[in-house]
Each structure stands twice: as C-alpha cells, then as structure tokens.
Length: 165
Image (cartoon, rainbow, N blue to C red; front, side, top):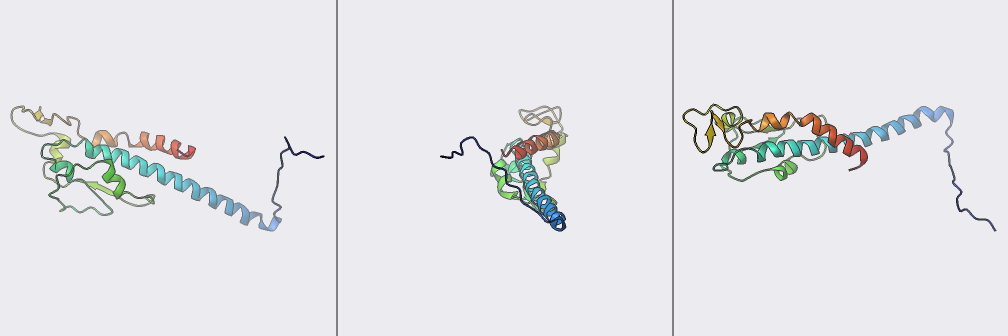
C-alpha cells in the first residue's frame, strides 16, 4: 500500500532554450499587469480619501461651496452649479473609476469665495463664521492640508494593495 501523505511534488515546465526569452517576457508582462492593477487600486483609494476630505471639510453655511466641487477629465472654469448637495467620498468614488494611471482628473470649485475659504481674506470684525480673516470651520483651508497627506496615504494604500487588502 502506498500513501502520499507528507509528500510534496514539484513540477517544472520544460522550456526550450529558444523559447526562454518569450516565456520570460510573458512572465514579466503578467507581473507588470498585476502590479499596475495594484497601483491603480492604491491611487484610486488615495484620491477617494484625500479628495473626499477636501470636499467634506469644506465649510458649510448654505452648502453651496461643498456642493460645487466637481471632478472631471477636463477643467471647466465656468462650471458653477446651483447644488447645495453635501458631497463627499461617495461622490469622489462615483467620479473616479479604475484605470486612473496615466490619466488626468481635476477636482475643482469655481465659486468666487472658495479661495477665501482656502486662504482666508475675510475682512471686518470676527463673526460666528470667521476669525482673523479665516473661516472658523476651516482655518487651515481644506485643499492644502489634505493634499499635504497625499504621498503618505498613497504609500499606505500601495502597501495595502500589494498585500491584497
């Protein structure tokens, strides 16, 4: 009686020497495609996280500033919506599908006062909404502070994508 318990088998594919270059190219192509998919997943997760925070950290009074963030393949400098919809990471996720590597995406807000929300510049005495020329809800802005974390978050998401998370 023969038992296979505890026995391992190693099977090697025998490749003709002339086909070795072709086989190696196929292997490298498979690795490259796999790594590109992981990189794309990491980039998309980072964009959803960072751009989602830019949007959700936009101060809300009427909701118009938050509702006027747009994501598109092209920048439309005259696009201003009437939306007072409170957008966030879900909006970013629906506007940034996979396949982002090598492509350009824009996150933009064309409201005339969004620059003051980001950089300050409100004049007059402090109010319940402003102090020292800055919004009380976003005294450090929302774009700069979140984009400052982009590289760190991308590195974290890349490690997760490599692990299959």
